[in-house]
Image (cartoon, rainbow, N blue to C red):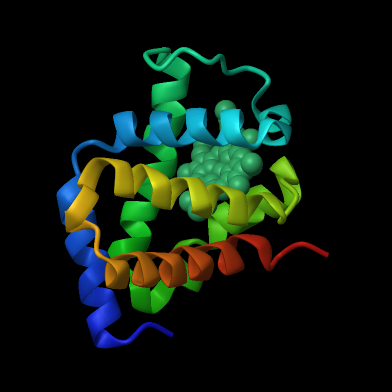
Length: 141
Ligand code: ZNH
């Protein structure tokens, strides 16, 4: 459960990156595939080129889902339920991949926002993204 202050910090960071979902998302995926090559097995159809349309499209979809989660922090379970079904039942992404994505997400934020991305903001984002991951992986059995 995020405190009021943590929520404000998550929203503050989101305001800085909103509108750049495709480019941030593509960068996040490229970082994930490069740092943790095992994650690439889920994305055989994507390449390694930063301006590839499919990469930008998937990056944008993922980050737009994060944006929805930011706007519905009180209601993550309800708002992410269809995505949780998709990841657990259709995509069958191993839950151990989620912490890797969270780590890369924080590095992408830090590399762009630099000093604006404070320690407190990182802590709040870590907690928030972990909450999103819990919901996306809880339908596995
Ligand atoms: Zn995921 C898909 C989100 C994580 C893998 N995803 C997806 C989508 C979205 C997402 C929105 C789209 C859907 C539709 O289309 O309908 N994810 C997400 C989020 C997260 C995630 C938010 C966290 C935070 N994923 C993940 C991981 C992985 C994945 C970790 C592995 C590694 N996904 C995936 C895949 C897919 C998806 C494979 C499919 C793709 C295509 O189709 O192309």
